[in-house]
Length: 167
Image 1: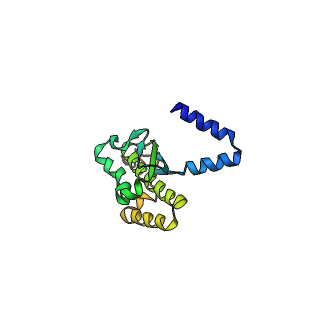
Image 2: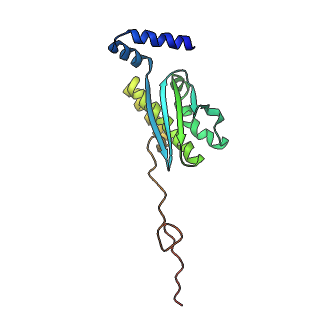
């Protein structure tokens, strides 16, 4: 593998910058998209491939908790095998709790596939995919803007006040 990579680098080094740029563009058709939920952020790198999906370097079927794993599968199941088998998806996720991370992951996957189809395939199939996802759950494409409200003085939380006493 190292020899093959070294030979590829040598071949690329021998060519002019224009040819090198053209070769790298055709080789790597990829888009990067993010999904957010509360403070969790997931970044999806969608590229041409064979249907491989990895989360933080691990296969998607090892994702915990088991009950919420189906939520991450949803965009892939909705679009079917024929659409998802053409792309590899690499996901990075951090921040938030495990539920927020799951919802951020599913949004990143959905937005990534839509962006990939828009950029490298055609607008009609992108619209078809987006309509399927939006009809199922709007949160797959559009982020949820709700955030935790900060605590204020005069009470124990954002809205609750301390009990008032007149005597």
